Image (cartoon, rainbow over all chains, first blue to last red):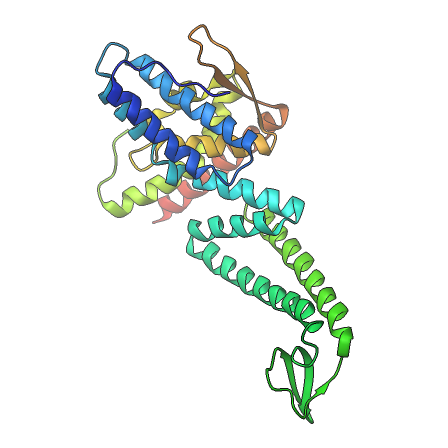
Length: 198
Length: 116
């Protein structure tokens, strides 16, 4: 449970609400417990600051406190990115992993490049998944085809007239297997990168 | 503490201060427990204009995750709880190691700067 102090000045109350709305927005990707804990701690911090300056103007005290605390969009970035990536690499959850990658991308150029490489990896993972899914309804248009000696096409080539489907319906389990290997491999690699960058 | 002139110097100094925050935080928390605002007030001189007070909380989170510090909530008469932090045994050991590394680095730098 979080709290909100009784502020006599309605402008101060509005400033408090707006600031912590920004904090809550920033912390959205976290679990409810983690979010609550962080919000609680930051409110406690601002309240302590207000207590130190009791008797003076509420609005200017509050503005001073939140100015010193900083912009939530800045100082909470590492909290969110770290927790998202940790949660994702523990659970293998693709949604959490993507969220963590997006936050990691914002931290630095190095992280941005790394995130781009992982994004490309996951793009190929998604492609293989699409191949597995669409092979059954569109068997003649999706798969691994040979159009000539040494000439191969993988994916959804469109017109496959004159081409040989090399795997047939085996495309489905093979594509699923590659998808699984890519996902596990990329996640393990990400775990390694996180450990090395702590 | 007086600041050296120059924007480049300020950026460099900010990075140095950021890098030392783990050591500073542990140096306080190994002696006794502190709540967040109290700890920040103690190290306020170390938090320059380029570092907001909020940057402490991700650090405290990380140190807690690494099991170097623990925390607990304490209900206060004001109705607003405080979160107290304290160094663990592992945190004490980490502090000793960091202090030794810092001293070594300091000595090496001193030697290097005397030569130039």
